[in-house]
Length: 192
Image 1 (cartoon, rainbow, N blue to C red):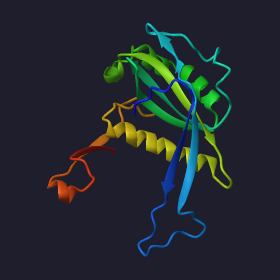
Image 2 (image 1 turned 90 degrees about the horizontal axis):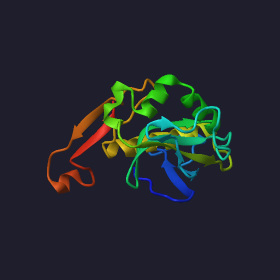
Image 3 (image 1 turned 180 degrees about the vertical axis):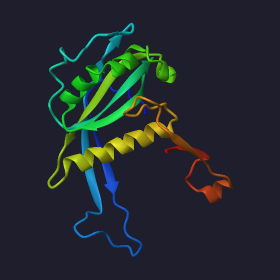
Image 4 (image 1 turned 90 degrees about the vertical axis):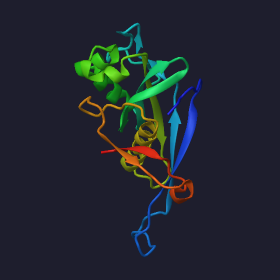
């Protein structure tokens, strides 16, 4: 997951529910759902391993709205996610993270459990959920969060979970000819 965007972008994720074995969908289910996330400018959280934004001075542009977010470390122009979340209130969730000493230790690079993510300045990326008629907010932002996690894992990025330990993953190895594997890569990481 590479993010180099200098301005807010709009992302639309199309989610398709898998049909039952007989090809039908559950009663009332839509076949597809367009979920819209409006990404905002990333906020720099650290400079020279010092936190420059804390829970008492959050930028005003971060609103009390539902959405998805991730914390990243920056190398050159590339932002590498290391923690991905979803929330019904982005402002309050960021405030909670910045008020949690174990998390601020991760941001400052002093937590020994997070050696794979020690380098790089820390940033907060967030996107607002743009609801459409009859969409369930919680369900939609969870779908987007799962997508973001899968994308990061597919790129072998080390991710932290709620306990601030590395995500447990399984490695899938596919063997056979290119024709028999079709679109599937030789090796993939998946959440355990």
